[in-house]
Image (cartoon, rainbow, N blue to C red; front, side, top):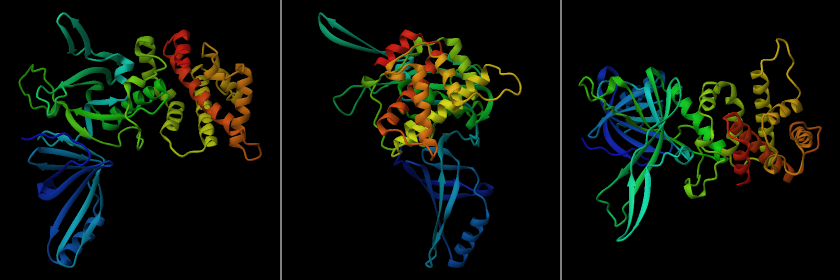
Length: 424
């Protein structure tokens, strides 16, 4: 069996497994939105027209199976786009799928998995999980590049989350350039099968974490998934596990025309080595509490073409959600009224153990609360004056930095390290 990595532009002719295990000829093509499947049909015009009518009244299964000379793949998130019929007796049915999984042959549909692996921009640098070391020898002069996997970093609980290193090297490159691909992957593993979305939610959480660490959009790519009941190695005690390749270009947060992540330009606010491991694990467990403000704040990084006022408005909402989450976590008495907006801002600032120009400019925290509140109301309410655009822009940036600084403090990063990161 010939293997080929999935990527946009991948194309193959094969057969689609339809109802009652009937195999239909089909053409599979991958693009930037997922997969397109074309199913040709030949017959009398009235037969094809009836086929089109039946397809409209029949729902397309969420999961389909495609076979070609390279093996079998599972198509997930399937939907029919329609059928085109011509009077000369030919027709084509078009299907779309969100994801493609290179699967085994035991008919698993991969709606549920017990393992998922992703590659997230910035994860390798943040975690320090590089496999590469370089040494210069002087006599005789030589450059020695060594690649060696490192012990996995265990992050948290259920499903178990780890950061793992890997590298790839082609000993016979097509050009004169010899290179080693160095990758850090985030992996989740569960003892039992869990829904695809449950695993994916954990990876989305760490994608958001990287976005806040770097203060810019970090892409995430799902690389592979695993099921214990779809393993080619059947001998008892065999530790090898096959992770099935996945192509899902819309996984996580996406952004068109985003520039490639350049490790040499990374400016993280803090690193994994700076955090308290227990507090990081607790943050993962309590994600539901903090996900709303984080989701709103990170969304602004993936938007293009929005106005400055709209960005300030979103960041103001994110701060309100964060202040409310902090207030709820403090255990207010039953029937307590939600604090006013300025009080919610103060709750956040009280948990940030430093004052810095990246957070408050030249203002004191109390002055910043009053001025930010005024600017936020100016964008929110029609009977208030709009803030000056340059001030609105500054407030939006400062609001994001405040959420990033709060997160760093929440994870146990020292005030000195946060200040150094903000200065960079």
